[in-house]
Amino acid sequence: MKKATQLIFKFFLKPEQESFSEQPISNKIKWLFFLLLFEMPFMFVAVFLQQLLAENGLLDSENHLVREFMKDNSKTVIIILLILAGPFIEELIFRLPLRF
Amino acid sequence: MIILFYAGTLFFKKLHLSLAVSIPVFVALTTFLIFYIFKRKTAEKRDTVLTTNYSLYFYSVTILFALFHLSNYNYTPNLLIFAPIVVLPQFVTGFLIGFIRIKQGFIWGFFLHGLHNAIFILPFLLFPFSNHPKLIDKIDKDDYTFEVYEGFRFSSPEYAKSQPLTAPRKITSNEIVLYGTFKNVVSTLTQTNKRNIRFKNSILAEKEISLFFRNDSAKIESARIASFLVFDNLLKSYNLKTKKEQRDLTIWNLVVKNEHLFKTHICDSLDNISQNTTRVFFGVRDTLKLHSINSEFLAKTLRIAFDTEIQNDIDKNAVFSIKIPNDNFADLKHFLESNYGLTIEKKTEKRDMLVIF
Image 1 (cartoon, helix red, strand yellow):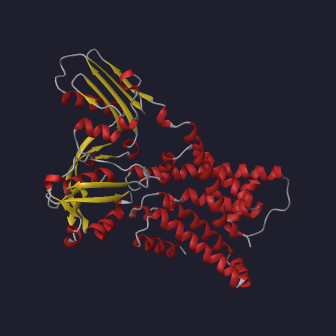
Image 2 (cartoon, chains in turn orange, yellow):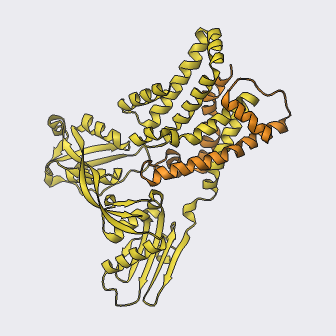
Image 3 (cartoon, one colour):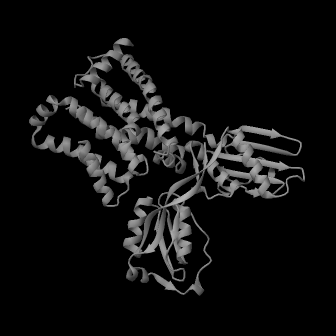
């Protein structure tokens, strides 16, 4: 875990295109969940800061498009668009060009 | 690139495209230009330039991804000022997805993105909070009972058929039954315009609550006294205090800007004014079609539909028909000007505000 954190920190300081050497799928899955856990503390801090802004009337968090979308659409549509199609399209636009 | 982003987004705003459209369109165009046109013409040069400045390239794309999510919010100047805080979560997520995409491949970036969204969305799908009313406080005294719940709670047969949109609202000296956002409930109980009420905690202001009050004594003589007693108990339940404060409030005046254009829409005399009832928007693509109305009615409708203080400064005798799309309030001014010769002018007024903290 310490090694993984160091690797992320090194990448943060100097992102480069070098990929991992060939590794088993179990390792890849471990990385996936490690990164999910890794982002959580940052999410809490960010949400806390956003709440501070909202409480002081500096940010209108009530009219959030995702919230409105979730109110207006069925669970199936929400899952397809927000968990599958949306991320896929965003990945095509923003992450696919990161390696060339 | 950030300057380009803001400039492009504001340019689209000038074209009166909502932020929800303008940001994604601009981001998509910019990314396309950066990568694909570069790729076609000078693939080798692109490789050299981007590899040499890879950090700059990586972070530019990550920041664009984060700023792209500003389109989830309603446009306000504050939104752009506080953009770095607002999109901080998306920046962190974008960075980590970028990391796994480079290290393990595209599909793993997609998995992480999908899982991230699922973690934040599934709890709301599985446990929609509005269906689970939570008892906040219950006061059982000799002469009255008071209950407050968060959420929609109307279990008695009298209210069982009610849906949140047509929630019961009863205010007498013997009984008070209310459902709505905290702010609306306070507005009803204190008979104060909700625009003159300010909550320090804006999240609490929008929380939906159900209120019940039953009075068995003759001491509480009027509905007004009962309302204040309930308001007092409600404040105690949430450990809140109130104060009066004078504040500048932004209000909008509905006026005629282009007399000629406006006159082309005047359709009838005041005698034929239809018996309209105020409507609100249902869904994002809804359009309010108002037939044979006067300016007073239009101002009232806009006030309710856009939840903004709008006053009428147009002759009440003019009767006209109008269609209002459910757009951003910022775009309403342009829409009224170009289609009906009307406009809304901004001004500020000192108002006594009820501050709840």
